Length: 176
Image 1 (cartoon, one colour):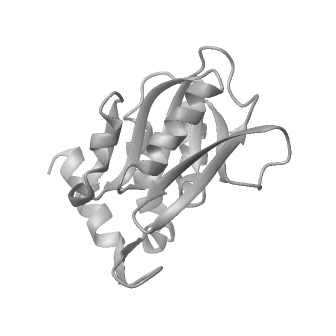
Image 2 (tube, rainbow, N blue to C red):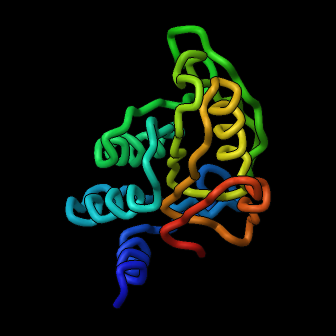
């Protein structure tokens, strides 16, 4: 098996589906079995980091994106920037609202999180409708950074989220 097919098989084996969570009609992708398996978690972090060229910062999207982005930042020798739900950051912020598959939300980042021209890798667990990733890319740009790429563990192709990110370099370890 190639490296890509090995990581894809690993992810498929370690992610479980939870129907009707967080609301009826949503099939939630639970990554906790993957996170609980040390060697699998290390392999995924290394695979996510391998999708990026040199970057200055790694932006992780609350909440599961934090879990993946922080170790990816360490792997790359880059800084980590949390992208949080509205009202969770203590200093001056900039905000961006967006639609997701089961409602709407607002994300924030510290206004000084990125320096002019910082190359930023955006990391999240799942690419679904693309709203969260697109809002994060907008925040990075508004704060002065440059989006180097977006990388995710899992892409739900049927929701066509990649179409909202057509101007960006998007990588997914597994597409379903």
